[in-house]
Length: 177
Image (cartoon, rainbow, N blue to C red; front, side, top):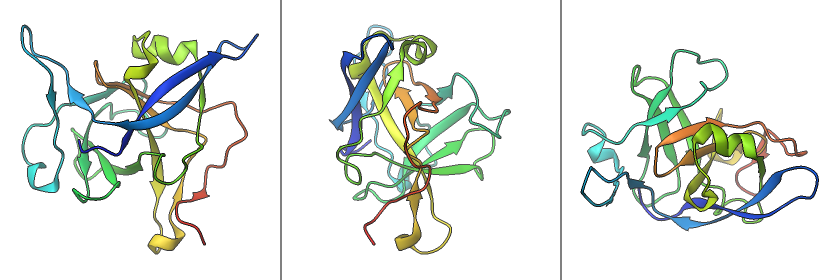
């Protein structure tokens, strides 16, 4: 994937809640190393959409799509921040996603230890955050769901969509009015 996606970095846990505050910074998603091999960067340009891309496995299905757990992340435009999460089983099922940093630089969701446990990780620095975008009309009307980000462990390629306990909008304008 191209730079511009975001890695989550955990800050100190909030006392008595067990939540970690996550901040975003630029990152590149890499494929897990083959046995005895090294990790390789994943390019997800539209021209490569027909080639085998690493699969992202949702630990729990996205709401409303219980039969779809495996997706690939494909760039819509190699120079832009818009990606699709495309179902492996039904390529017609796609979700538009963006990294939060270019649109919401102060976005710092708090996720609980159970999310890290679901992903099977103890290293929050290896996590990637993506926001699901709704683009019903024009680009100016596009919104992002800040309340339910998709969290991906870059090493294992496991993902979950979490519903945060924070007071965040599910339809935040992607671009200023």
